[in-house]
Image (cartoon, rainbow, N blue to C red; front, side, top):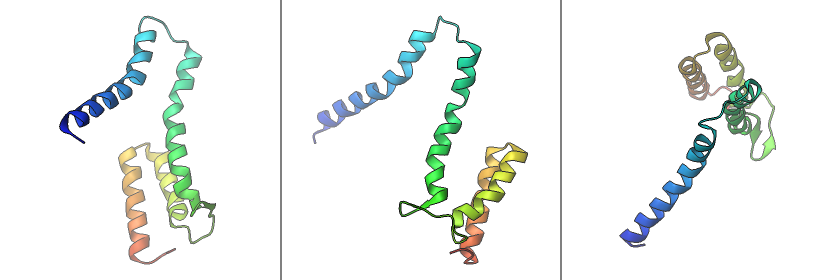
Amino acid sequence: MSFFEGFFLLGVMMIGVLIPRLLPMGLLAKRTIGKNFQIWLSFIPVAILSALLAPEIFMKNGELFLAQQNLFLMAFVPVLIVAYFTKSLFATLLVGMVIVAAMRYFHIFV
């Protein structure tokens, strides 16, 4: 691939990423959004994060894995409690990483 082809490809990808972001802003900039729609929109980040994390926590090799040997499932419970009470992303991530690292270091559930 030549420099110009790569530059052209980069430009096309930039446009492809910007259009889905700018189009809604342009169409909805002068309109008021209803309260119910705003509430619905607030659930999108949580839904996306859940869709990304659930397979990592509950599955292994493409199959449901709910055994006690599931390291991430065992770490998930205390992390969920910390997330609920602290409402802090940093504390939640820190506790999760420490628990998984400790379980791997001490060969617990591995």
